[in-house]
Image (cartoon, rainbow over all chains, first blue to last red; front, side, top):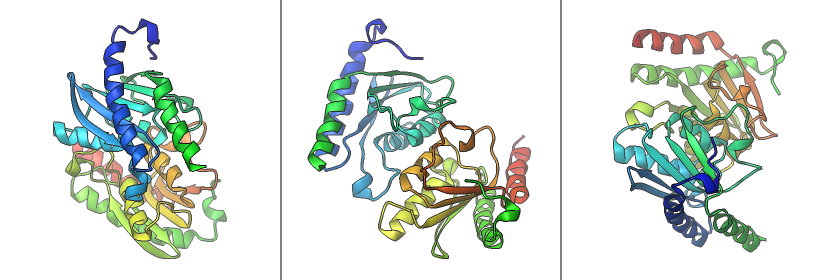
Length: 154
Length: 154
């Protein structure tokens, strides 16, 4: 289910947490990684922060979301994140959406849309049936960071 | 592209390597993990071995394939597995197929089919366009181990 921006009473909270995810994305940018950041929030508390580390770790699985899932599960001492929200600056890819399914995450909030690599184009949806999601929170800021990164690379 | 069992001249090689993946799956079974094992082969050499560790690590991302991808990249000192074959006893899930896409794996050989959780039901295919795959190698042995595991659990 997609909440519309103007219908969601929790938007200001979502913007607050997305700014925290953006800080992580900025760290990735500065480290010359594709700038994606993620945090996991459980009962209004940030329990995990991560940014993309695929270059530094030489590991395609080291996306921000994957690390955030692992860190959050470690913090909670349990595999399932069914009381948690993941904030991530870019629409999760196939790998990360599959991981979020296994984690049974309660809610996903993402910034910029990723029509080429994102999970939304997949049929059937790779997410857990109980997972809600919303996209487009601080979309411009989140997307601009990625655009700036690839402009710098060219 | 799916090779048919009786058309593939490399079947005996695939069976040989699948038996190695099955040994890993057996280790998972003995550790009370969903019994899935994987190996990565590069130029006729096994460069990574792994089995499912989601329970021990308390981490939904610790599938056999994910660990095998990370270990193989570490061995090769490079993120891309475009000269490698992954052998895995069960059809990869959405998460693992997404990771295999990012790794640009050359070939995937799997044992048992997984119609509920496997990647083959997804549209569009989550695999890299250059990735070839074949399913059903030692299908019965691979599938029986999973069936025995869930029978034991009931």
